Image (cartoon, rainbow, N blue to C red):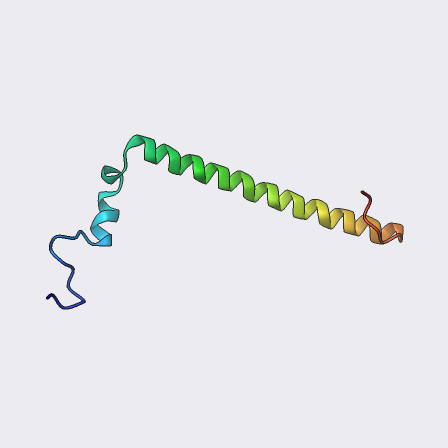
Length: 71
């Protein structure tokens, strides 16, 4: 058995995997990762816009003094 702090010779360690980078990923997987990142970015901006809209509605209702959200 190898000591726990020495990587096994048959297993590439995480650093060498990261350095190899795109050699381990085909073009299709890279595109999927990029698409997922784009979807997450779009979703995040959508959530932020919703939060901003909710704040605006809340402020508007406080100014009107009616306190209930318009549905």
